Image 1 (spheres, rainbow, N blue to C red):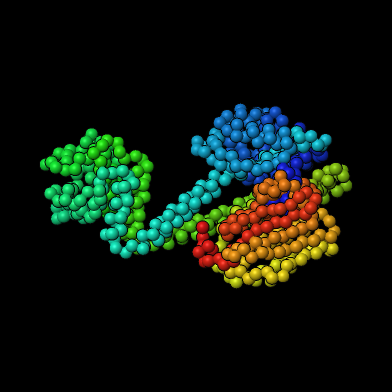
Image 2 (cartoon, one colour):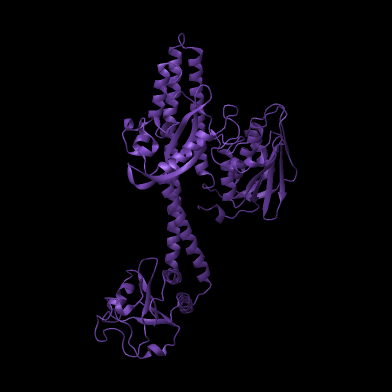
Length: 567
């Protein structure tokens, strides 16, 4: 079944049949291959068994930051010394195993002094006698996509932390009690002898701050002292300029510069280790500061600082809840815009990749028509093979686009009768004559998104029929109530999958059957797994070679609107 669409170890892409010293056939074939190489925006290259570059396109030369001609005849370590190990290993793997695969590669080339990321497909290049003569590579720069995903993930995690803190703090409506609890917790976690929160309010002269909470000692210890002034040591915190953590405050150049005390007044609690963290509202204004002291040297660690910074953020959330809510709404809108931008990027990239492919297909047909009375059967076969590869690449691009969107686009959940949905799925499929599909009685009614569930069933049932490899194909669809979840299964009587490939079938671009035998992109099962995981479920397969296969997945009985929000 399709694993990503599929069924045979390592057959992520059918081997390319080339003679590395020139194509078999007419000069038109060479021109056609060159046209393909130069037309696509993806980086393409052919590497021989000695790891020398035999052919590449301008897109890959630009990625490497070297002239195209400078690559030819050079080895990968010679061209990319910093990335040699990362690339040579996969190339040798293909040469040794004959298996195609896809991997992410990161590193620096001469074109950029910053690390970048690429999605690289490695496939064996075979000569006419079937021997592996080299490796073909397809390179897509995914740096911007990875950076966008990282930013989205970080923003999502930050938003989740803020929401969680907000929910916890919302239970305490007394602000003074809340801040006292934060001060007590920060004093304990930091290892301070005492801690205090000073509210950022100035007097008529613009110099005084009011004591708000105190922890570790009684207020009597501060009763005889005036409120702290905007000295050099305190200014950094009250101005919101950052955290101050000192192993010995008395040795800091900012200490002791302000009259009349030139340091701590007589009778003040001894302070050597010092930690101060500004408490800043969501609007950016400084609410106040958390201050901690200890008579010993070097008490406050980096970890303590991080803990106090986290608690200070929680205090700010509680004090400025209205700002938090608005910020949360802005972040959600930003995430929605980012997802829309990613979708637009994927669409444009798909269009730009497919346009030259269509041109190549048309060109090959024109060439064949022009040579109608001259082309040999072998040349015609090459042309047909080329057009078939174009169709396959277009399907692969469409599959990548579907994969990038799977689990991200969200609709409102609705009431879905699974039996009716399955009937709609069967109406979309072309069911071979002689094949039968049995749907178990008692299918549930779920409250969920319709389209993702339809996609999962469409892929699984479609794969069962596609890979049955027998005229009397039989598919059974069943369901089992697990309480909050339903477990569904799609069973076939096909050739089965050996246990060692049960995980491999879910990997993107992996097919277990040669694609010249059964056409597939190797993406379908990856889409299934991505959708199921986005719903909090899991997907797996149970099968033995020659005994059919059963694909299982779990799905929530009732999906809330929150689950369907942008992630």
